[in-house]
Length: 259
Image 1 (cartoon, rainbow, N blue to C red):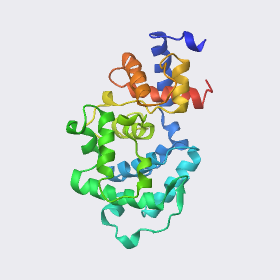
Image 2: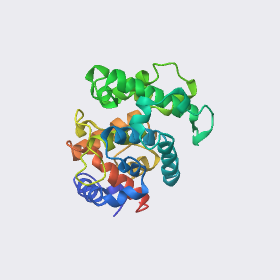
Image 3: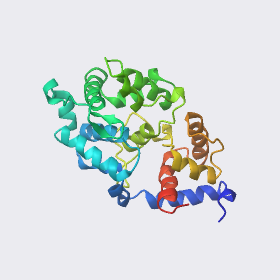
Image 4: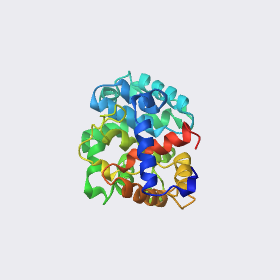
């Protein structure tokens, strides 16, 4: 099958098959999503997932190892640690945790997350509030403003995206996929009920971008917010109810099938 000759509806049938194949529990063991799967409390799930998504770049084994270290730092009770930590509980070194994400960044994230839960009711409330933007991508940018509304290290701001300034917000969109999509297939969690899965955007990175271009889903060369908008339109043509299920198809084609 020639890549560039696959088109809707043939493309839909092809990607539906791949999405069904790769969205399965076997996906979990090698993916950063394994970290929130270690918890049963919804607050622990969403916090561990958020922090894990923030550092999800590079080698997946390394991401998982670094995330486990962060969970250990928070006594493997992330919500309780965030809400009840003292200054003495925070390590004041600048030691690297995962590549450019270091202890200074993590400690600010802990303090800011406490503020988010105490004063906004949690991450979901901010992302679901239409006063924070007309769509999810705008609300991600608003979330960043709120997240860094406390006194913060300038260096830490690079770890959250602003789609209104061009970011594809790959890791945050992946996090939203984890939280919003149904857990019927045992991979995503579906614990957030205020956001519809039809609103989600593809977690676009260099790998999914390459596959999307090969399949004719994306014409732009950059992996930015405009490219997310373009590919979202194409995926919603194929499935307006659950367009982001195709993240599994694009990922599987790239990583497992070397498409």
